[in-house]
Amino acid sequence: MQERPPDIRVNIIVGDQMDNAIKTIYETVKVRDPNQLEFHQAVEEVLDSLGPVISEYPDYIDVVHGIVEPERVIQFRVPWYDDEGNLHVNRGFRVQFNSAIGPYKGGLRFHPSVNLSILKFLGFEQVFKNSLTGLPMGGGKGGSDFNPKGKSNAEVKRFCQSFMSELWRHIGADLDVPAGDIGVGGREIGYLFGMYRKMANEFTGVLTGKGLSFGGSLVRPEATGYGLVYFAREMLATKGKSFDGSKVAISGSGNVAQFACQKVIDLGGKPVTMSDSSGYIYDASGIDREKLAWVMDLKNNRRGRIKEYADHFDGIEYTASKPEPNHNELWGTNVDVALPCATQNEINEAEAQMLVSSGVIAVAEGANMPCTPEAVEVFLDNGILFAPGKASNAGGVATSGLEMSKNSLRMSWTREEVDQKLEAIMVNIHKNAFETAEKYGMPGNYVAGANIAGFLKIAESTMAQGIL
Ligand code: NDP
Ligand code: 2IT
Image 1 (cartoon, helix red, strand yellow):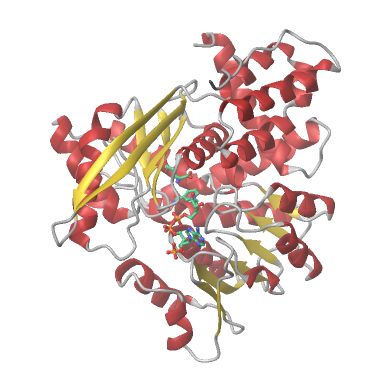
Image 2: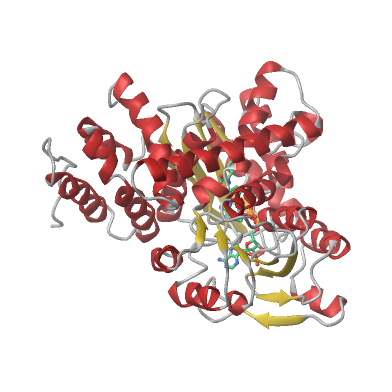
């Protein structure tokens, strides 16, 4: 018989024992769910930062105990029929991680790699990210191992309807508000929202990223990519640098990558790469507005592969991905700024080393956890400006928060107003992470700054409400 994992329990501790108490919590997380490697990775990074906070507020160790366990996990069957009439059965999930400061909030991911480890890592990150936005949103994440690639529009619609025919009873405008993530964009949110409205028999702001004609917010599609570049701009400014004239490597070619690319161009930078899971393109002359519009049509309407960019434009290098999942040689490019915007663990230690050797100044995560812990260490050890995703990609969920307010208030803002609010939120997250890192004796370490600042707000709320 398998041994029962221990309850998470650590006695109240003082001084030197503090670090051991945090380590015990981390070890217990690993014993409880030994196969959830992505979740372990996300937890370890946060817990590593919390020593100085627990020294200052020893009671908060109880919050740490609780925060590593989701409040609720929902798993369900999603049956659907393809165009030939064959039955497929996928898995659906919603991880409702933490609601201490607001309703659960976070995206839905449709990708064949989706499992509980990935959704728990994403939900855990989301708790701290949402706290950093300064808006009243708890953290959650969900999705399915459904692969939207190669599916017809009708198949995607049937899948979304089947998915929502179960999820609807677990979510609500004041309970849990999902949005998009990998494989879930405006089209999927539309189908999901339609089914929610039918099942619940009510029209509320239960999802964000909706179409403009049914309650969506201006700038939500652009928000993650724009916010990322606003954050990176602030970070560069601390060293007297800017995007103007800089060469920028971007990975991915989906929602976050496209609008990061657009904002880099707006700020006078030159994006030279984009990728998808098959490979990457290098455009030495720079991806300009016209070429980016072509990529957007390729990806959002024709749903094609980035390789077609090299077939369509002259003088482009295309390199297929390495056999190792999530990796290609994109990070060997000589650039000033790197913006990984595809998926988790796409920059490993060797790739980080390549970026450093080629003279990169700043790395800002558009994706969630795209850099491995070893890669992050390489950046920090070499004095590279490094922005962790929970700070630098928070613009998407922040604008989702604005969409929730807009829906509740039944009013709307202009494009300029939303963009200004997004920019102000990103400037504020940067300031908060920067100053918190200084205050806790780790100047320039945005990882520690973001983790501590995000944690403090949740800890205060949790202590005030009791750990439930
Ligand atoms: P999209 O589905 O729009 O685009 C994802 C892009 O990443 C595609 O180019 C895709 O290529 C590539 N990609 C996905 N999985 C892999 C993989 N395993 N290996 C290599 N490439 C891969 O998603 P988003 O742009 O919305 O999301 C990108 C990242 O940003 C994710 O980490 C997400 O969690 C994060 N994020 C998204 C936010 C949002 O508002 N959308 C907000 C904050 C973070 P292919 O098409 O070949 O799969
Ligand atoms: O990872 C993320 O922050 C998102 N996918 C966006 C979540 C949201 O609720 O807008």
